[in-house]
Image (cartoon, rainbow, N blue to C red):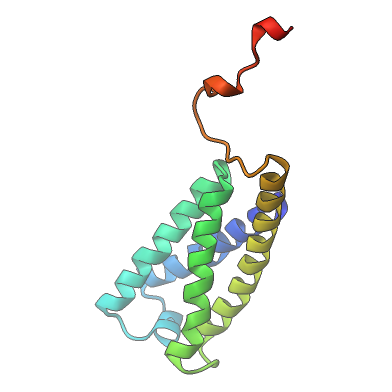
Length: 142
């Protein structure tokens, strides 16, 4: 699971750093991929920067639930692009499909490991903070 999480988050950064740089610099290739400069393109840049920021933070402080949420949102929006754009010829659509496949595999790994952990713990979810009173060992039983 860890390797797939690392792969998905790193893939986000490897794709988003040059894409965000191109959008910020208004590079020549950007018009072909994203259309003419517009408010919508700048809003998309904000979404991309948010995904890049969260991917960076989650690389250093991995939390499978937060990672699953980020990746699931990406899979949904990336797989909807061919239908909404109406073509498979757009390079963004093609890259979205490929990236969503990697993220989907990562989500399966996260689900399997999380599901296995839930089965082993009887469905209890670990919560931060001090142990509950009922989960502490009674010193008189030593």
